Length: 350
Image: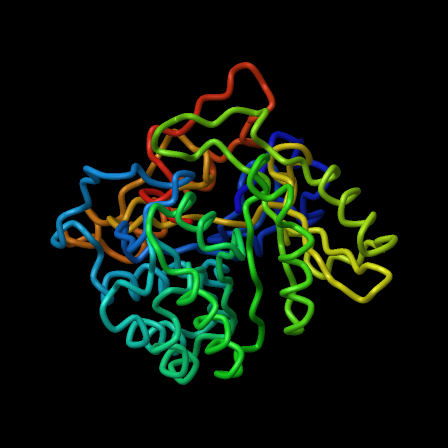
């Protein structure tokens, strides 16, 4: 997830302004960008209320969506400027035909070190082995509930059993890392959190909870619906014993991980109550080729227009650098001047 309204100065790289930074994706706060989240489609096979409208969804025409070759070119250009980590998102990325083919293309780009996927898991079972073989290294699977009735309340579709099957298939496929994500929404996760942590722990997985953010298409988000990370941690400690915070191996990692006395491991992502913008190193590429410097940005820079003209790689990189240069210190969620993005999560990329 994306970042916050805290100052970037505390995490800025001390080498700002040196000659070696020429050509790098570095913003005015010294943050170097190494991570690119790529939405491969805005389509999805479910309709979660925190992401999409229930019906009458207008999806992008196929011709407007970047081809695999266009995505490959963007990544190849940005890799020369320091992009090292990729995450494929949607919509639901697994509804895109032959996603394994794209992963194989991306894994061959010089400089790319890590390719991950965020998915709702429903289509993962039949594709897990092919994705792993193609070069996918890590998978995040959404799991907000262990109850089918609640699953349907959230997603407006049946299918919890398919998500569980997807988790099992991911583990069997041998990915470097499989993580489970749940949105921390008051009134939904309150009485599910302990069960989700047990479910993950029994399978040797990390359960991560992400504070509910204002990215719903219905624009019904309210701060009172956010189950705060600190409150959730206190609740879990009552069930699993004291929690010890673990070192953050990468300052840009949004989650703060904890290990409980019983051995359970949980990650908390607090974009609302404890923003982490100061160390953000992410860019986002939407399905139709718009580059965004923040999940909550009100601006986009079109790369598709360049890709479909005679633009050079240098021009594509210059546009990406302009996008990075315009990045703000944080997303301002907790300030009166905050404006919810006009586009919902499925249109930006999860």
